[in-house]
Length: 476
Ligand code: NBP
Image (cartoon, rainbow, N blue to C red; front, top):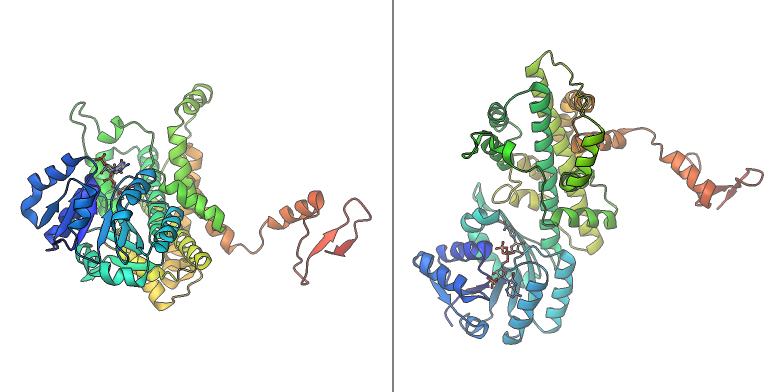
């Protein structure tokens, strides 16, 4: 055997990850269920490094040095289990199986236990950055044992994106930790994209500016605090003209957003963990709403668009308000995502360091942004931060943006432009800082109809009012 590492599953992601590994001087064994993907990789890119191609899984395994590290990069779900079933009987004790697909972290927990019983190490590795990232440097979130990371870490850190000389790869924690944080990363990505889309919608429809003009606004924003891959790409997409029609590209694309499911998983997990990720949830539901074409058609037929677009006296101020709203709502969405990571880590005993994630998300991944440096600094200064929102830098951003944020939500609401993420983030901010919440009334109702009991503001304990009796209060 000559290969330092193996990779099976050579669709867009696996092919590019294999090339990235080879380009960094590691000899890599490559395999794919259907042989053409393997042979075409060797034909097209065999000169980029040392590849060892195999048609059969047995030859593939035999070509890797022991203890072996084998990366699986196939469609998440049943395909991954099928590959694990075919691969593992061929491995020896101490070998490392790496699932680099977008697995659900609970599948990773299950697979980890099953493989551990057979003396194999299992690593759930989250890879972000899409096709381009896989080739030129992704952000890599590794879950699994310390031992497995000792073997895998050097290669992974070698192929990851670099920011200020620091690789965008880290050992996040044991078993499902890597796939869990990759899932939340994608959830945050949903929220970020929804907020950008709302900012665009408000600017376009209230100011009546064309996409190409708005591209300039986003380009300008990219020079400041909002500097990020997604904002840069927004300018790129808005500036693009459809060749067939000569219309703005964004006007010829069907307005039904799709999803592969990681946003949904993030929200499902947040519900289980009891963490309010309102920004991610609204973003996920907004995609769902966009896809409900029949309901949208039915509603459009009944409720005409009575647009009461507010006049804007100071356009520059309004643009600045939208920028402030976008930034403030982004702070909230990221704070919520990091809350989910902290809670997931606590409940699963993973000991995840949020600051490390902010560090490795600065490059390679879709949510890469200047902003993540601020998050890294916040956790560096205070590792047990209760919420990012109260940390000095972010609390200032929220305070500075608050007035504009409110004006934008009011203007959008008046104009009938949906801003679920802007508005729900603002409500979350208001709920957190509010002295008293109407949850007190909800507790009263619950006690009345179901004797669910309540606490009091003036005494410890749990109480019940005899609603159907003399309405006296008893200790519960
Ligand atoms: P796909 O998700 O499209 O999967 C295609 C690969 O899975 C092919 O190699 C295919 O083999 C293999 N495969 C399937 Br399908 N069923 C199989 C089975 N029963 N046994 C063996 N192999 C099987 O590829 P991708 O888009 O490159 O993504 C790979 C992984 O990376 C996924 O888990 C994805 O969620 C994750 N990911 C993707 C991105 C992205 O931007 N695309 C980003 C981050 C993570 P075949 O060639 O023989 O059909």
